[in-house]
Image 1: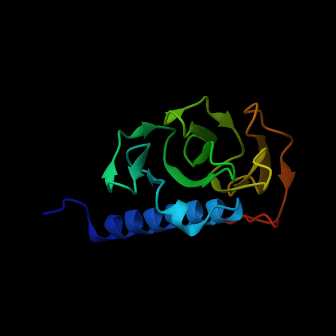
Image 2: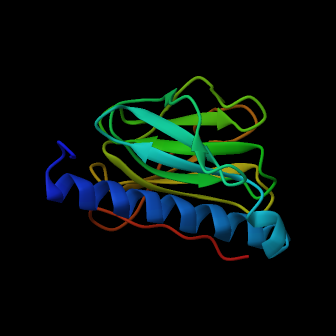
Length: 163
């Protein structure tokens, strides 16, 4: 029997579905065939644990949870499949996970309450929507350095990049 409240269970299920949708979208956008998508890894954010768990779709087994920041809320995978960028709401950071090793890199400070992340088609820049500071912060996926925040409308919660 689960000890999680139904509300938390719904949140975790929603987070897992969101992570899977981001993964499939990124892989298909990068030119992967649908048959390749099912032979890969799913990454699931667990906000209360401060971790991201990789799941092998070949075995449907979870790997060792990867420590990121406080309250990982959204994630996106670079189109080249090399990095998962994880938005940590309560740390005000984005943490890269290198998919070849499933190890977290150094977190990059962004704006207040980062909420969502999207990655450019060339895999070089992640754009982070910062709900609490009304900005979007570009972050280099190569160097991990944040660029100048861009002022946007009040409390941004979603971000998408057009190819």
